[in-house]
Length: 302
Image (cartoon, rainbow, N blue to C red):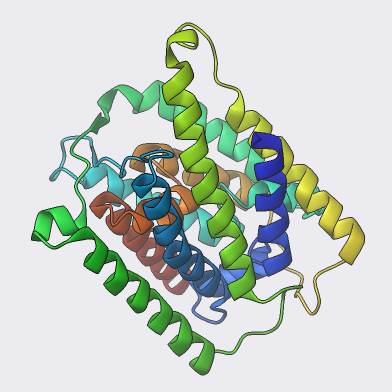
């Protein structure tokens, strides 16, 4: 299951073009909104899928918890981590979920981003892991006292309006094999379904894994590599995708910042931006806002 899910996820990212450095950097410079279209489409569809799996009793995926390091409020680690993730994405043209399709498709900077990411993970474990505290799993509807169903309907409508406006104002450069909206739907289906099924598997086997390691994430990543590689071999290079030169130093530093930020905030672009936001998790909205804010500000200031 993780291998197949990872393969579809990697192929979806690749086919929609959202893995490409030019697309991610273009989003941070507000010149290409493919990334926004893909992830808001995925987040809107994911909200329905997770609601269905929860209602039918297949699995109940918990909203993202707040993360704090005790500096300025219960969401300070979400804010700091999101900003670091955004700056790292702006530097590298990659985020934790897209670096593996980049490796599979031969993006030169991706290996340095990956190695930088390992460094960032080690630094987080050594310097910050013990300082981060997980708090409440607050959601928008529970905080405002609004019914969950209506809240999700409003959220989905808002996502679709933003996507429609972005499509009208910034049609895009066709740096993809399939429409960003189709790619978003595929990503939503696989990420939300996998999150639900993985939670169900974990809940039914947790007693057998207390003293062991969970290798599902490694298998999922392997699948993402295979899916991206296979699609790139079949389809060839992305149509009209511009070449982007990212130095080894820039890629390494950006990779370290991205992973450190993702670990600090308790999730990455897909975890917070798709699964978390689709559950109306307040920590996810804050993290993604900080990520885009940090990435855009860095792009315009540096």
